[in-house]
Image 1: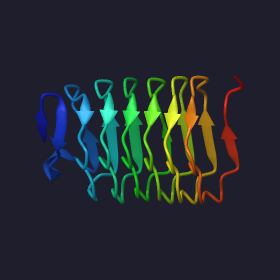
Image 2 (image 1 turned 180 degrees about the vertical axis):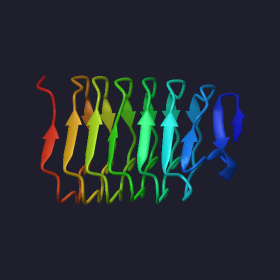
Image 3 (image 1 turned 135 degrees about the vertical axis):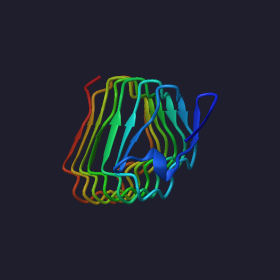
Amino acid sequence: MEIIQGVLRSVTKEDIVNGHLEIPNVVNYISSNCLKRNDDLISVHIPKSVKEIGSDAFSYCANLKTVKIDEGLEVIGMAAFAFDQSLESISFPKSLKRVEPYAFQNNFSLKKAKFGENLEYIGDETFLKCFSLQEVIIKSNKMYELESYVFENCGMLRKVELPCT
């Protein structure tokens, strides 16, 4: 594992134990493309020290099923979890403020997403072609922007819950 000044730059096969990656508490940023196309990854724990996940950080991880995110994360970068076809559900910490465009596009198994009270922005096509997505819960009343085509081609989507403001 390569960590430079709090930035997780790369991960080796030896860092992933039985499919699980435990990101150390010294990491505050997961760099772009850090784990892209890592088929060894099944689950990951993102500690409270991580404030931002870079673009494409976990994209194309075909076997990624479980992502545990502690309080502290504020930004999910562009296409950070795109094309992760085994990911079924994800809950975000209350600290999350921004989800950049395409963050979860083409996650064919994703069924549910739940956002906390501080979310302010969801970018373009965040859930594009998430064919199995059925439910999205947004508890934030701080939401100021829900970009275009966020739920484009989400044919199974039955419930989007937004707070009354």
